[in-house]
Amino acid sequence: MKTVIQILICAAIGFIVSISMLKNFTFDFFKYADIIVLTLLIIIFILLVVSFILFRQVKKLHHTEADGDAEDEADLLIYKKYTDFNFFVQSSMVLSVLVLCTTLITLQNIFFVILAIFTMILSYLFTMFMTNLIQLIYPERQIPKISDSNYAEKLLDISDDGEKHVMLIGFYKSYHLLNVALFIAIVLSTFYSISTNHSQLFSIIAMCIVLIIVNGKYCFSIRNK
Image (cartoon, rainbow, N blue to C red; front, top):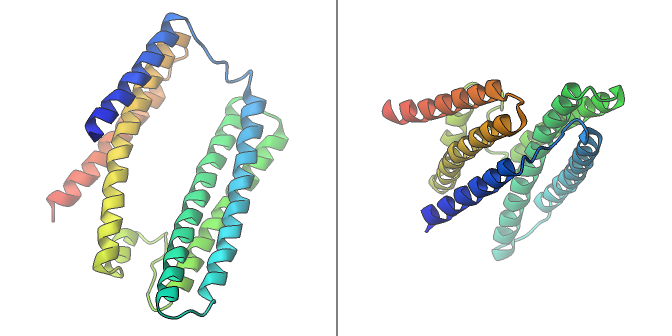
């Protein structure tokens, strides 16, 4: 069923792209750069505000005393809110990079460049909150630093079997999705280059290299175990 859904999604994307090419559809990013940048900045600030609220909620829940089933429910809620916090912060960081790249490429006002850099710094500071939160939730564990070269291995070492199972499922799904997403991005970039005569060859080559590296890292990691 999952394969059928993926095929249908790819077919829908291919159909939309083909129709767009036949009708000579083009999108002038330079023309709408201001709107794009402002929209992204608003989204980033919303994500950061929500992230801060989640951060406060996790801390409050952690310091709330509970027993029995109430404690288990509180732990589950903390885990879910921490996961949401993690996703929103990571998304704000990615969007901040996108805003900075967009402002530099489209030669936006210096004010937008400063805002983009500010949101990147703010998003990075929020990633530091993630480490503080997980240390707060699991004070008995030696949580490795994100900058640690063996972060993944050390994180798995301090996790129990149930956590490892959940993490590995998530990692594999992300790995599979990355392959599909990059392939679709390569196809879309190719169609965009053909329809607009704006070559995206460098981006296509870069994505292909990333795809090869990711698959190589995965294959050799499991091969050498």
